[in-house]
Amino acid sequence: MTKKANIKDVANLAGVSIATVSRYLNNDLSRMSEKTAQKVQDAITKLRYTPNLAARQMITKSSKMIAVLISNIDDYFSTELFKGISSILESKGYIAVMFDSNSDADREKNCLKPSGIVCSMV
Image (cartoon, rainbow, N blue to C red; front, top):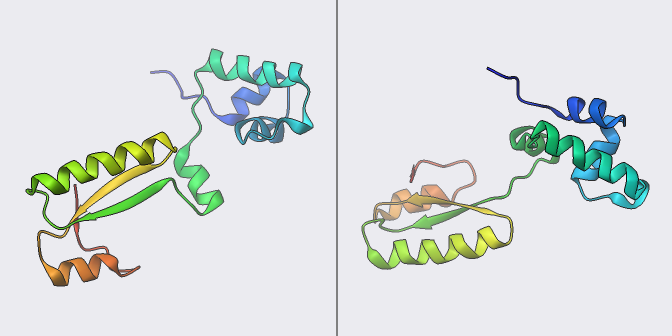
C-alpha cells in the first residue's frame, strides 16, 4: 500500500516551502512566479496530491457543507428539491448534506438548534 502524498511531499518535490504550496492551493499566486506555480502544479500532478479537507476545516474553522433539512424523505417533492439544491450548491463548490426530520415537528426544532443535531443524516 502506498502512502498518500502530503503537502510536505509536494513542497520537497517542487523544491519550495510548504508556505508556497499552501499559497498555491489557496490561489494566492501573487507572491510567486509562473515558473514556481508550474513546479508546484507539476509536483501535485505527479504525486496525485489532494488536500486533506478535514485538516483544512480545522485550520479555517469552516467547511463547504450546507445542511438541508427535509421534512419527509419519502415525499417525492422533498427529494427532488434536495437534488436541485444539491446541484446548485455543488456548482458553487459546496456539499449539501440532507437531514430528515421524519415529519416530526419536535425533531425538526432540535435539528435547527446549533447544538441539537439529533436528526438522521441521509
